[in-house]
Image (tube, rainbow, N blue to C red; front, side, top):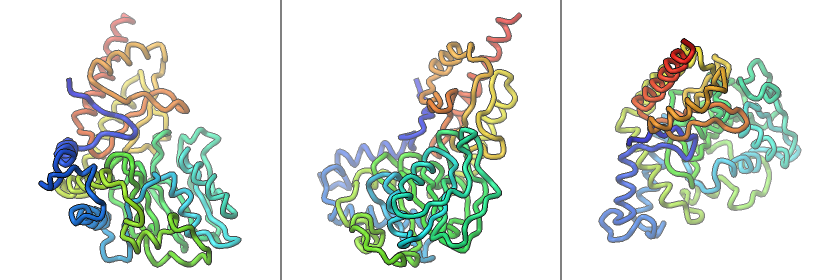
Length: 361
C-alpha cells in the first residue's frame, strides 16, 4: 500500500531523490566507491558541495548579491548560538520575536550573549497566532524571527522592514514560497523539512554583516571561517549534503520556488477548506496565520478519535498525530508531498463525517 507521509520532520522527500541517493550509496559517479565512504576533499564531492551552495543561492534569487551559502552540521539549533556569537556586540542587544517553541529556544541561547529583547510573544495563547504590531528597538544589533512554526501550525505572512540585520529561521518552510529573500541578512534552515535528510543545515549569509561585533569567535562558530573554507572547515556531512543537492535539483527542474508555491497553495487550500467545511473538525491556529506547511486541527468531539485514527491508518497515512503540546492532528505538507496524498486525507475526513452521521440516524 502506498504511504502518505505527513511526518513533521524528518519528512517526505521526492522519490527520485531516494533512487539517486540509493545508487550513490552503492556506486557514486561510477567511481566504484560509495558516497558514504568517499573523501570530502575528492574532486567528485567538492563538485557536489559547490553546486549545492550555488543552487541554493540561485533558487533564492540571491546569486551575485553578496551572499554566501554554507552547509554546516549541528542542526538549526546550533544556529541559535552562532547567530548571537557572530552578530551581537559587546554589551549589545538583540531583538527576538517569540512565535513558537523553536523561537523560544533561540531566545534562550541569545541570552547567554547579552541583552535579549522579546519584542512580542504569543506564548500565553499557546502560540496559536503570530504576534503583530510590535516595535523593534532601533539600537538592536539584529532582529530574529522564525518564519514557520511546525508545532503550532502558524506562519509569518509579512516581515518587518528594519534598518538592521534581519535573521530568519526558515527551517520548516524554506524553498516553499516566493519571498524577497534579499531583505534577510541571515537565513538558516535544517535540511530535514524541504531540502534533505537530517544532518546538515543551510545557512545563507550576507557577507558584509560579518566581522563587526569586535569579538573573538571560536573557529567552529565563526561564519567567516566557514565561508573562507567553502563549507569544508571540518569534514562536512557528505551524504546529507548530496541528498540536499538532489532535492534542490528536483526543485529547479520543477520550475523553482514559484512553481512549488502554486502546488503548496493548492494543497493547503484543499485541506483547510475541508477543515472549515466539516462539522467534525476545527483548525488549531488563527486563520490569518495558518501555515501552508503544517496544518494543525482538532476533532470537535474526542470521542471520534478511535474511528478517525483507524480510518487514516487504513488509508496508508503516516505521521498525522499532533505535537503533544497542541494535541489533535498535524498534517505536514512539505514540498515533496503530492496533492494526491492531501486528497486521501480529505476523503478520510469526509468518510468519518458519513460514518458519524449514520450512527446518529
